[in-house]
Structure formats: structure tokens, C-alpha cells
Length: 255
Image (cartoon, rainbow, N blue to C red; front, side):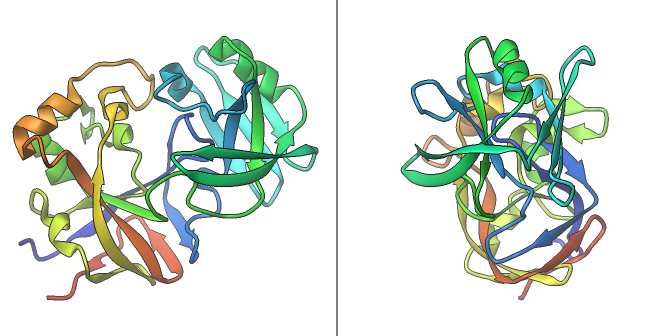
């Protein structure tokens, strides 16, 4: 076991299926991070657009400011669009992976820009409250060492952790050390998180985190490294005590 794990990165996904973005600081409430997966896209049939079905949406970078009621979108090539989150239309409901979510349609041109890029009509929806989106829980974490052992393709700074879309990224851990934290309450900055279970991975990890292009046989690689019955990488947790987490914070793990 390592002696000094720390937070090396924080990553949120303001709009489900779009790019994740790195931030230096987050406020963790009981329900998670207010800006994380706060918006989603609905197809004409009422289903939710996912990166699995629309991998190229990962190339669209969101810039969410809840205080100002604004969502900026930057598309590959430099095209941009802005959504006014105070201009809300009809209420809608959606279900994905058995979880229900309520929201209101965001009026304006951003939906049209996303629809053109995706190749089919999409409606941008703002969730009515902070929540875990359709993830396993409000907190997710993974160590760089674990990703290195699995052999994920590198970006200039090491393993491409963007493809894993995890809230907290860690340095100073041994490979898969975070697996042993299940059942423990760890301290991240001023927050406390109860680690509950390992995250089973899906085909999304096989796509580049910034472009959506499929560039890696991730599930086969994970099966070779961890075994076919253990396709997990990273951990999920619940918020035991709300607080603030910043890049560089040390992680306190009880012995």
C-alpha cells in the first residue's frame, strides 16, 4: 500500500455524452456535484442520447455556469453555441438504466447545433435538481497507477483518464489500491466519502476521451489484466460529509 495518495485531477461532465472537463476545485454535496451531468440530451423517441450511441459527441466541450444560467458549447473546428438556462420550456421525464430523471427543455439554438452535429434531432434538457445522473453514485475515483497497469493509451501527461470519465483522479497509489477502500470512509479535502463498490466498465472506455474515436480494445485488455469476471476499474462512493475537494489535496484512508 502507498503512504500518500493525493487528488491529481478532478473531472466533471456537465452534459451527459459530451466531453468531460477538468476543474481545479469542486463542491461536493450529499447528492454529488451540482455541475456534473446536470444536463442531458433527449432523442425524438424520448430516449437519452449516450456516448455509446453518439461517440462523436465527446468532441463537443461544454462550459457550464449555473450561477449565470449559461451553457457554452465548443464544437470541433471552433464553432460555438450558447444556451440560456433561464429560458426553459416544457417539463420532460427520461429513464436510462432503470433510473428516472426530470428536467425542462432548454430553448434556443444550442439544441439545433447539437442536432446538426449528431445527425438527428436532439433536445437539450436541464435537470431540475442536483443528482447522480445515471452514474453508479455521486462520487467516482480511479488511480493513475491502475490505469497504467491496464495499459490505456497515453495522452501527453500519462494514461488518458478522460476516457474513464471519473470525478476524482489519484496519484500516489499502488495499482488497484483503491479497490481495498471498499467499505471505508476516506477524507478528500474537507469532504468524507464512503467507498461502496467497484465500477464495472463498458465499451465507452474504448473511445478516446476527447474525440470519441474508438482507439483501444479496452474491455479485452481489462479482461486480460483483471480476469473476465472482474471487468472493473475505479470505485464508487457516497457522500458521508459534504465539503470541498481541490487538486493537490491529500487523501486520508483509515488503516
